[in-house]
Image (cartoon, rainbow, N blue to C red; front, side, top):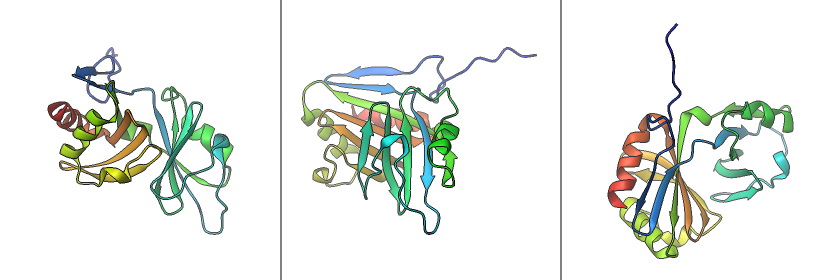
Length: 180
């Protein structure tokens, strides 16, 4: 049998991390993702104690978070839980709801600014065509970045996560690092 070695979405044996002036980009390989969708007539649940957010919003509590992805749909996050059966854990929280494992379908790149919000906002202004006032802390947007569709989640004034398709991880890293 062939010896297999695990690799990250960016094809490395360890998560990629690079510093560009005041900005640090790092691949978050520990982030588990599962989508949650309501079926007709279902009430909005509170998995892991999270009050699921409204349109274009994101919430977090402890190691769990959620962001709105569509009408009656959310992506649920589990920090440090990528190696677990996160979808099964979510399904146990919300029996009867539609849950789909998403962890291996996406790559998450965390961007942190050590010099306040300005470097992060300059980076965003060169990458995406959005009004930066709409991406305040606690907000989430789905937008185009170069030729890719991504989720932007503003965790704080100085912290942003970009979640894109795993199959485009190299292109996403290249776009972010070139502009950074």
